[in-house]
Image (cartoon, helix red, strand yellow):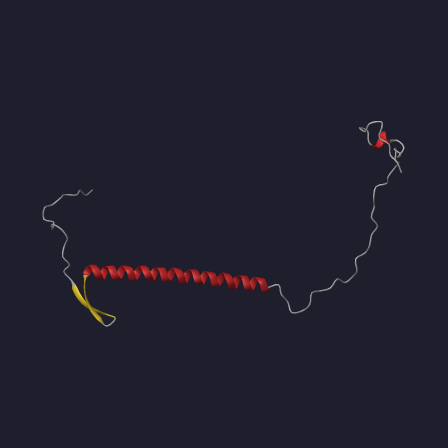
Length: 123
């Protein structure tokens, strides 16, 4: 197990960059130190990874569209659909028989059991 041992030989304040490089950007000469160079490399890697992500998303989208198009056209055939060989046969509808109607229009109590006695049906 390691233990941090503070030392007094650390530089005070910010360390001055030791590497200086002259670079030409857009017909303009600039002097970069190691911090600037590493910052540029970091930004370049970040933009590269973003571009790779965009390309990957586009590839997945195009693949999905192509799969959907092939699935939509897989059942389409050149020949017309097969027609039904025989016409449908009509059958008789079987309903239950109605036995007997117990009420008449003269007896409103059977039709409207809750109606008062003064209600009369007229025809």
